Image (cartoon, rainbow, N blue to C red):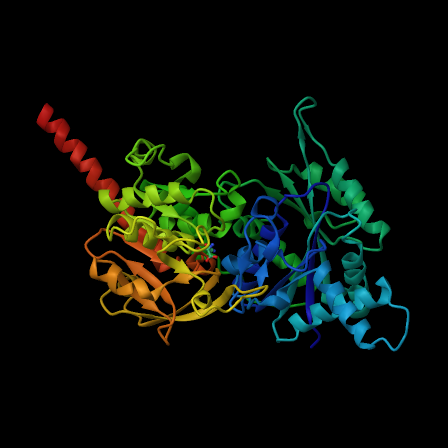
Length: 553
Ligand code: GLN
């Protein structure tokens, strides 16, 4: 049986949610009992998103094998069970890197190396590699918008795939916009028509149109789009804005997207079972109460930099039937103006839980330390991720152990007390280039710890990393002697992976990024437990208020 492909392209404007649409199609096909692969091509020239600014590119998503990928792969993992690795996200830069390497090695035997066929062949080979694992359908998302110069080789490659594999093995799904023009009080189909035409001019006839709208698409509108764009009427799908992204697969199912894809691919499959997704959507639209979390970080004005984090918190909250209210606090704004200045506390009051996420560089660190001190002293649930774990250790060393200049060598290389450092720094080894600890590492949990309880009594877990600096075990005796508990380490005990504070309602820092593994239907235990602790905190404050009102009354 030959591999089957669904190609997802986007038109009109960017940011229509192509990644989400692709992931939702994957989810739908899985709900019909099929095994899916997901992959994304990014047309930019960077070799991977690892070194791109979170402001420009959003979060860098990390897979088990340590690939630094586009954040759409996060959607793929949250919506499907597709196995993802560095093979599932390729940029133009990576493709050219491979080609130039081959050319230098003499693999092309002196031939002229060209976009067609060499670049397109490399792209097609990458698709074949992913689809060769025996899954039923491979969904390929092409980044960018049709009409961009950079996406042309990718579009040409998928055009060739249709030529080679035929109609019954390939489907072209195109995501477009049908805007509401307020002045005319009308939905407009022209941008969609133009975008489909643009695609046609490079030899691709779209099969299915996902039309983003802010309202329902009337039948007349669908008929018109179908006629002008040369697709079946049922292939014009209303992709209406919905409050929760997890409703998208349910909406696509209502529009019959799965059946249409299966029809085009000549594939039979059992009826869709979306019960769990529908339950999830119901719970997120009918919460019993809310929980409010403050995230103290550096890139807070651009939420996409913390995409998986926000989703993981949402999963934790929805699992408890709670609505998540997140407040983003710029860490720099929490810095003290003089040593005993605690005026920042006013900004931290009233939250049920506080989280410090991952980050790089010195900016905002002193503000994060203040926020952590506040949570430790006031018994407010605290969750520190990667940088948030490192800063929790520094805060403890400074304010509990009295090491006033405790720091990470990332922020103060001259510090006398490098609580956080590059392991090899002490050995005097110069590190070059990509020295990050990346991808999945095993962690051994201490029995009866907060972490072990959260993970349901597990003693061994695997989580994903993306950082350079580590806890310095020379300070372990001092910090643990003063009450910090190290509850997770690598199996060889080289690296500290989790710290916590016994006696505190929830104070946990982890060196890894648990947010990358949280799924809506399988919320990550550390996020779930953090939300539970935060909600308890909320309830106890509510009952205190009730008590004081009763007393006053
Ligand atoms: N900057 C820190 C390090 O490199 C933390 C990185 C992170 O939070 N992802 O170790």
